[in-house]
Length: 233
Image (cartoon, rainbow, N blue to C red; front, side, top):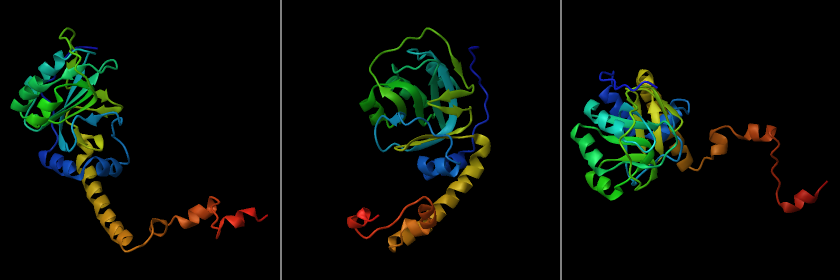
């Protein structure tokens, strides 16, 4: 792997980032054909976090947070850091001091497939982090990685300038080129759900709303009046 830090990337449109963030992970994931979701072990370090941003990618070495310091210099207002590690690792690669530096550059949050520490301090700062683990294990600065290259983080392909959406449901990545279409599909999904919600509130069953009965019958489901009917030949 060549160690590089790419200065200039094309970022996602800020208005679309905001809209997708308001829709949230679950809606956006479904709206883009159930793609882009990171592994469920990626959890917010404190509950109630909800943020979206244009991605700056980092590829780090295990137990080495050197490239996070490099990434600070390349961040702009509204950026979201997404950090992958070359080998599975849970060391505490990110904490309160790095968060302070990132916030000074306008970064809105961090997603890291490794460990995070200083949870209380990060919550006080209001800097949201999604990580593989919470771990006080310290790190070194010894081996370079890369910044703003394509990566795979927690099972999701991520490119610089994509959109990262993160909340209590997890993390979802939306490719920058598809962001407008995904936003439109997300709104359509919410509109459809609003109609369905009213029908459910009125007492209609999902069995009927979604047309499940013929499919259940074809799959072999039979309704009987009581358990005694099971004894009939």
